[in-house]
Image (tube, rainbow, N blue to C red):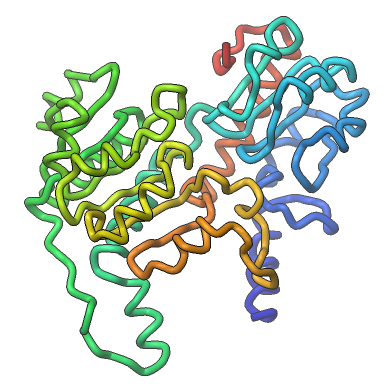
Amino acid sequence: NSEKTEILHHELKKQFSYPEEDETVFNYSPKGTFQDFNYDIKYYKGHLNKNNLVLTQGTDAVCIFVNDTADAEIIDGLAKNGVKLLALRCAGYNNVDLAAAKGKMKIVRVPAYSPYAVAEHAVALMLSLNRKIHRAYWRTRDGNFSLHGLMGFDMHGKTAGIIGTGKIAKILIKILKGFGMNIVAYDLYPDYAFAEEQGITYTTLDELYKQSDIISLHCPLTDKTKYLINDISICKMKDNVMIINTGRGLLIHTNALIEGLKNKKIAAAGLDVYEEEGGYFYEDKSDKIIDDDVLARLLSFNNVIVTSHQAFFTKEALHNIAETTLLNIKAFMENQPLANEVV
């Protein structure tokens, strides 16, 4: 309600410094971070697009987030306006036309802001779906304390399949090992030293699908991983599998996921991302009808939890995002090597 919203807003203002007229919290850095860099920073609400390119005139660097798009037209417009650096406040860069940017401007990113935040959110989705926490919450608020339909399973002894074993996945693996789960993993570039240390097994994708009770996606979005989870891969999975995606929405073909949910092949899905999320995520659409039929269908399942691309959203992560972004810009301005350059 409005009272709680005001309290939350007040608490956020204690931690973040941003203009009163703009409530896009994650566009701004924690107090005490950016002052030391002595930059003239201008904040604008809304996504970067061809209609607001004019706002970039006279700037050296433009900073965008995960749901902004920097296609060839945008890149050309930025270059004509004199922009020399595009600084991403996120790890992924599939929203940037790198070919168009080559020779025109440098691209930097934040490769790791808090792998703990994302890994812990993935676990939260697993536990909520398994133990039906979201359904129990709805019921008990209405005075319904029935256990019907709330049965879960012991995660101890079950097998988790982890696709992609970067920093986030490695933290997730350690957490799941603490639950007593067996771990199988797939990565184009396996870290066998880590696997031996943690007692996990690298395997093929087909074997991972066949063995896993829970599958969690942590690979980057590339041409090869787009729609990695599709009708064919779902058919190879164990019955009643749970699928978790805190990576990129386009890793999953949503219609195939819906079919898997409908025919009970997939027991549950936890999604922090969605392939067509740009028009919805980070926006309040509560007073409008969702006209994306696929997203509306997903939200209709009681065994699906969709969160609003918030896995990264912790105080520690926001601090690290702001700090790394500003250090990236500082390195560029001082002609230092760009450790986080995307090439």
